[in-house]
Amino acid sequence: MSGHSKWSTIKRQKGVKDAARGALFTRLGNAIAIAARGGGDLDTNFSLRLAVDKAKAANMPMANIQRSIDRGSGKLDGEQIQDLLYEGYGPGGIAIMVEVATDNANRTLPEVRSAFTKHGGRLAEKGSVAFQFDHKGLIRVQGTGDDVLMAAVDANADDVIEEDGESLVYTAPTNLAIVRDKLLQGGFQITDAELTYVPNNMIEITDKNTADKVLRLMDALEEINDVVNTHVNFDIAEGLLNN
Image 1 (tube, one colour):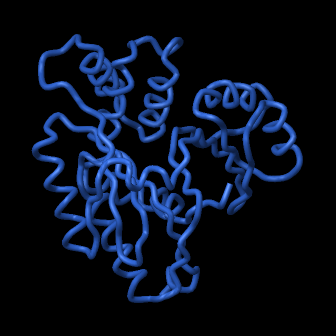
Image 2 (cartoon, rainbow, N blue to C red):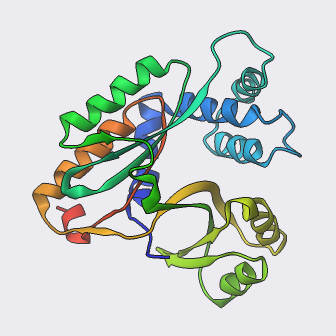
């Protein structure tokens, strides 16, 4: 595996901003509704269990969670939520994958396109960016060291990367639930588990002007309420992030 972009860490640190502008529960609810299309039982639908766990961690009220489950499983009237994946390029030739959950693609697509074009990027045709990424399961485990590494290997994980005091455990998408449960059974504390897109190769950004443009584009995409997640192949030098 080529490496791990700092953008995912930056996004996690920006979670307070999401909550402050009131978009977080909307995103979490849409993610739950999409997962619930595979069934409303948490015991048999692991994707739904992951989505609900994220919502609970964000203190989303149980009434909101249940309403999202009911919506996704067809128990409530209203427009069905679609999950869509947009692909594009940003400043410096970086590749970007944008996951959205929307009840109106005719509204969301222009918003995503506008974010790209206003900040030096462009939407690309389907498949023209996706080949640069691998679909993976990602589990964040508190702590580092041989204990985590050996437990992950024993659970059939693909790779482990240590970062900022935690271990990023990568799995095949179909093994995410199995590896997560085995690590939990082993007593390890898991802070997050999700399906993600991991870049095959990284683009290192060392120019301050380009870095600023990239971050403005990413902020614009994250400001769109229907955007659930973004995946990128850039890394920004630490000194540029702190300036």
